[in-house]
Amino acid sequence: MRGSMSGSGPPGWREVEEALWAKVERGLRELRGLRKPDVNDVFERVLYLGPSDFYVTNYFRRFPIEAFNPGAALEGDRLFIFVRLIFEFYGYVSSVGLAEVSIDDVLEGRVGRTPLPTRIVLWPKELWEQLGCEDPRVLRLPGRWLILYCGRGYYWLEDKMVRTDALALAELDDDFNVLRRGYFSVRRGEAIWAPSNRDSAFLSIEGREATLATRPVVRGTKLCWCARADLEALEMPEEELRPVMVPEEWESHMGWSTNAVKLSSNELLIGWHGVSRADLAYRNGLAVLSPDGELLAVSDYVLSPRGMYEEYGDRCMTLFGNGLVRYKEWLIWVGGVCDACVGIFKVELDKALETLRWLKG
Image 1 (cartoon, rainbow, N blue to C red):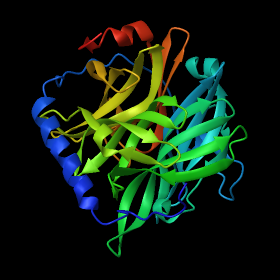
Image 2 (cartoon, rainbow, N blue to C red; image 1 turned 45 degrees about the vertical axis):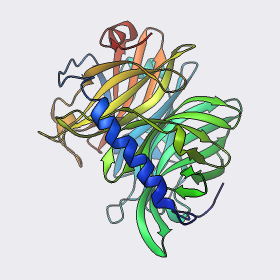
Image 3 (tube, rainbow, N blue to C red; image 1 turned 120 degrees about the horizontal axis):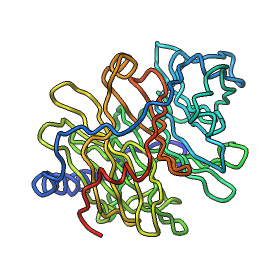
Image 4 (tube, rainbow, N blue to C red; image 1 turned 180 degrees about the vertical axis):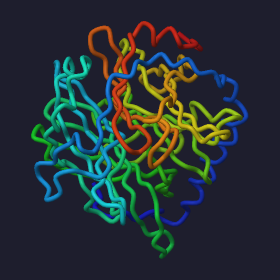
């Protein structure tokens, strides 16, 4: 993986941008009308975890000032929470900490009585992530962990250093040591471009090739895409990037909220968010994708801010991801609340699936 970000790469990067913009325009014309602005909040609030609930064991500051937008993974009855941590206001630079809890204790509300031992496992090192490692989405593979995250930092574009959000990949071993890290670019022939990108998740992996749900930003427009990606070269072929869902007329933008959860051999459940033009609220829904990224089903909003905890914080009226797990009959959303704390939400899986409108399958 590359250790520093070259940005546009060879001359001709605008060719990549033009090709993606044509897809954006077509998607906005053809993909609207799949959803309604209705809210059917089916999730039960289980508990909230604030900054004081995470005791950091490997840093000189023992408690963060903010803890939110966690990734999550389940092994047996152990829930791994990959939480975004911030320790000071000046640069607001994020790292990723790891806490481990019993999923049964979580569901019964027994977590949070004492702080959770938390170890920082991912922090900024490279130019392209100098301003923080944000919003992890986690995939467990034999002997390793893959984390998709947003690297906020800088890169060189036509001899100028510019700010960007890089879609980054970190590979960790079983002990959560980082083996390699880098960022994704989009390639079209000899031209390559690293657009601002985040809010991404794995759908399938075959060798070094993966299918991702992803969210590149093209000329300021934010919608939900799927892509093929080379995990060694860290490149997405432009011809295999395609819009899947777009903001409806009442939304300013949208993105993927969570990792994908397997329902069957050809169905994956994933969370998404839409941001309201009326009140700027982040509201979430569910979708079913095929392993190659085809949209099979979609809901309207099923998780929406309510009550002071979910309406007031650094970013008001915001419920976000990044974790989604299945346990017994439950679908459990491990998410960020107002950029201020972690929220655990649960719903019976069958009830969640009843909210879906099937398009195919």
